[in-house]
Image (cartoon, rainbow, N blue to C red):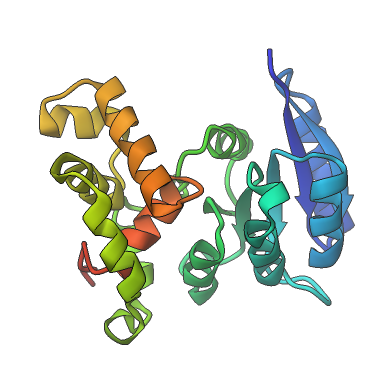
Length: 227
């Protein structure tokens, strides 16, 4: 069984201790380091070969957002997945976190099982939405930004490399649907969906499904709906 190597990044020692006890109690994961600021988190992610970083946003010095950008920009850390821990789930930082390369976010008030599930989901390369969030949450967050002025023409051009089916799958991914749900909607097998998702990620240079969601909106393929 492969063990998921987890790094804890939070300036509150008490929270880190609680997370460590919880994570280390699981047979398939272990805490390999603790960081009290973003700069330390980036260094330890590399030194300890972390798979998943639980990253608080508000930390002294280098904050979690800057640290997430640094991890995403480092080719040697391409395998590292960042899960943002936030006190307020409806937060402008969430948009910035996803754009910076985070795989998703989770409220600090989540249940222990939700946190453990989040680590496993992120380690598997899936996009992570808080269990209490609706499937359209990322769309509403992205809609907070001025995407009409901030659309990336280069990304829009790269969409031309996708097949018609890959575009269809990307639209479904952006809607927050799982592979099984997409398979049912498009009347194909989940394995076929996974293949299309992986090919779209490769063509678009996306680290994971969360980045596919961001690309789908920033390129204009999907228009955000604000409720």
